[in-house]
Length: 501
Image (cartoon, rainbow, N blue to C red; front, side, top):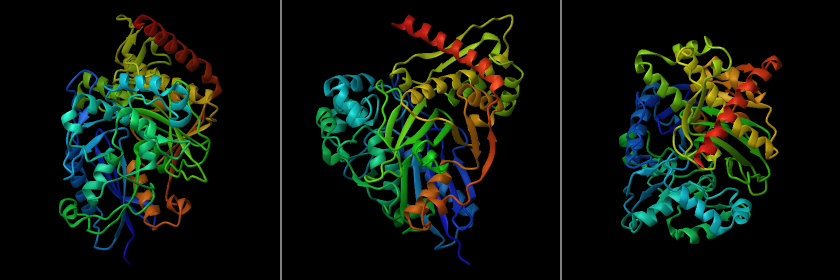
């Protein structure tokens, strides 16, 4: 009997992951991330962060070939491809689909002042009520930076894309984007349910640069014979789903209804909550986008809090402690040897560019309360994990102020959620239940492709094979100790902010 298989691709800034999902069982049968070490991020100037889109494509080819071989995929078995991707990146191509410059990626800070000025010029009321955000440091502002600073590049632009749109183009030869993707870039007018003419006019963005808009779940093009040669994917297989990494992570965890929440803790840390009304934070510290299952008659929005300095802080400490000579499991054991509060040691983790929850300010990373006679590496590791959770809690409480109900959070059992100390800190500081699942972004993208290609009849069937691994409930006896940790962290943050004024 011929299997029905689906391929999910997750284009991150650290790696490209591919997974093959058996649609008949709902389980992944092959998975691989490339490269083995993290992909490089170029920083040609202070606050800049860029990657070559052709590098992503190279690793898509390698990862696809590997999992197709690992799963022994036969002709006719692969029914669809789904693509998840790092949000907010800007890719520019000319008429020959050649990349014009490196992609300005999510953690790049160069366009902060451009977005701030647009917020004032367009009017805060218009931005918050129509865009649900300040233009901030998002994709539209990054494009304006190119127009202002690299006019010779802007003159050659044929289309602008997000990272996932670029990979879809390489697979199908067609340049398309999605409503959810445009909302991530702050191109979308939520009141008019259309492109924001005001933002395009203000930034002098040619509307013809915007690709054709397709639904997240839909037939969006088929793999070309040329792409087939490079990837091993059979020609004619449809690309049937695309979404940014955080909406897709929520989808992969079946977070689709109002009040449901998803979280991640990789290079960056996020909490993503779904609502059916267009909520916004007046200070744009957390951001509202179109969710993957949004329909005009049945709206669905995702509210995203993001902390850039999450896993990157943990990996920085690992490098200091010897790099490959120490594993993350060993680091987690070290953290468990220190008590709650790390004996007064506090980490402010904002060392990876401008932070949205800090109103796009570059606060930087800070280690405070260090006592050379008392603190050791155990305290250092635990303080980092407590500092990361405190930063997420800061955003969590903003979401609560917006009126969101935050009771149970879902996550994949991966990255920092593998750490018992991180999990314990997260559930007690935020007073939530935590559910861990056997899934990831690539598997979520594969399930999305199954819906888009009609392999699954709908969401219920797509998630029949999703397995919950563990659940964690907070113990109220720990609420006060962790609240003290958070209060100390917040006081330190406020002192740092006052010093920078």
